[in-house]
Structure formats: C-alpha cells, structure tokens
Length: 251
Image (tube, rainbow, N blue to C red; front, side, top):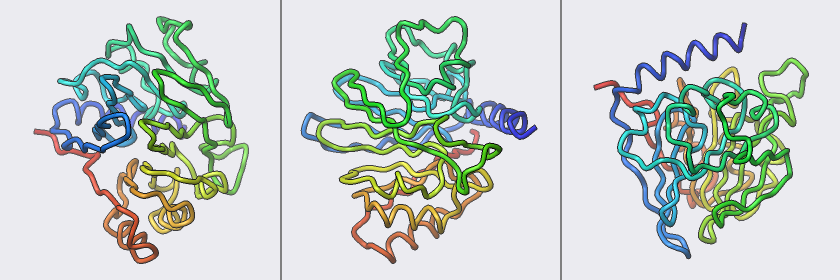
C-alpha cells in the first residue's frame, strides 16, 4: 500500500510540473570547465559538464525536461516512483545514454531498455563513465528494518567526481554513518521529508558531520528548508546552503 501511495502521489506531481516553470540553473566552476546544476522537481536534477548531460532520477514526464539536451547518462537511486519513473525514461531520448543503477532498479526498468547500456552498481562499487568517477554510497532508513521504506543495500546514493569536484547525491537516506564519513565533498544534494527520510534537524546534523562546501536541500516536500539553512549555518557558517525551488508552481 505504501508503494502504491508513493506512485500515485508522484503521478500527480508529474501532471502538475509538466506545465510549471522550473528553477534557474546554477553554474559552478571546476578544473575542467563549467558544471551546470539544473533543479527539476523533487529528487530530479540535471547536471551538465563538458557538453554531457546527467539526468538524476528523471521523473515527471518529458515536458519537465523541455529545452534541455537529451541525457548522456542517467543515474537512478531507488525503485520508488519519485526516483524510478519508467514512463519518463521511455519519454526522454535515451538513445545515447549510459544508465547507472542498483540491481533492484535494473530489475524494474522498461523491457525496451538497452541492457548493454546498463551499469549496475551495488553499495561501495565504483565506475568511470564519460570521464566521471562514480561511487555508489549506501542509502537506507534508521533504525534498520526489513520493513523500512528503504532497506540497506537496495538503493544507491552517489558521489561523482566532476572536474576535480566531488558531488554527493544522497538518495533517500537517514543520517547514516556512511554519509557522516564522507570526506572532501564540494557539493551535496541532501534529502529531507517525513516519514520516508530525515526531518530538517536530522538532515542538518548529518550535513554538519561531513561538512560539504555547499549543500542543496532537495526531496524536501513539506519541510522548512529555511530552518535547515539556519541550523546548518548556526553550526558552521562556512557551509554554503543553497535554497532552490524544486516545487515550481504550475503556470
């Protein structure tokens, strides 16, 4: 029932955001050129570097990506409908895209997916694609339970090394030891929403443990991201907390 509720909720998100104005992109300097960070919706974003486009958890239908180039790589963190959306994957042009996923996601991809383009990673695995180093990081709920929405080992967070900068994408996780142990993260995307991931205070505590140079709260529907910023900067004023709109209002 929980999975059906999640799928229904994010189908409604897709209908809403298909006709919405997305947030402005950010532009980050790296040793190898500019990295563009484009928020899309909820857990979905697009990273562009050296003319290559990385779609992270593409959801919401083809219209939310209108005006953006087709993906050269797709990263998917988990099986839930706000991360794995087979209809969106079918709708965007994946002709040249490498698709990086955990095994549980690979098992649920559309039958039309070119399996030769799949790169399947389990927690701790590493690969290099398009000149970008990718490490799969655990993501799971605490306390650990076989009935938790996110069980250890099923999904992946990711650390990407892009132009000398380390970019962390949390996926749906709690304030887990593996996140706290991260080092030298330049840009982090950290989830927060109840009851499936962290609350604002817990997310702030986790961020203060691994101290990224910059952090984007994402996957934050219903949470107070201004409070998150205040808590993080009260603990470390040097962390650049970037508040962006992952929930644009329909035009």
